[in-house]
Image (cartoon, rainbow, N blue to C red; front, side, top):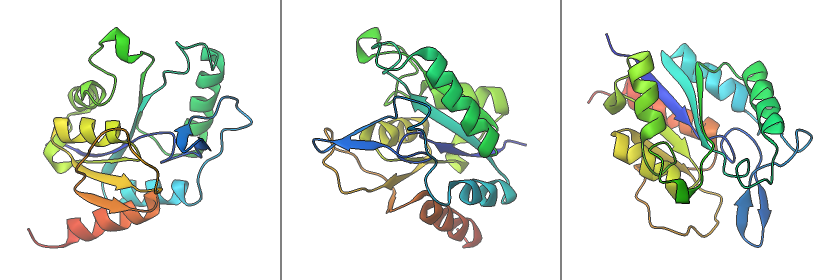
Length: 180
């Protein structure tokens, strides 16, 4: 039987993003890497409801030379240590690379679905950028946008909008309980 997944963007969903000139940026050092309030509990609640928790994250700061790969790996080790994740899919490419994994393309979600026997149509993607929503929609997931009130550089049509991961999990659990 296929499984359901909660696909999670990293920066701005699980950990704090930094805002400069109205744009969000990933942490650049391990010291800057801080989980957002309620993340551990929200993921645990989703897992208790039968969802796999899988991170799907673009990390262009590594190939751009902004963040060393060792620092990114240390951030991901800390994330795995603190949050009950089933998998972590990372795209270390730039748009110019034209890879299949960089969101808004659905490659990371499709790869996870194949590896874990996931029913994408019964799964959810939570993100805070248009690229996240684009990838989730392209994969056939229900998409939830965490809105921080920042301008987005592309249009998007999420299925739902919340203000935090905890609120997104509340919405998911309520949807799962209500009859179709």
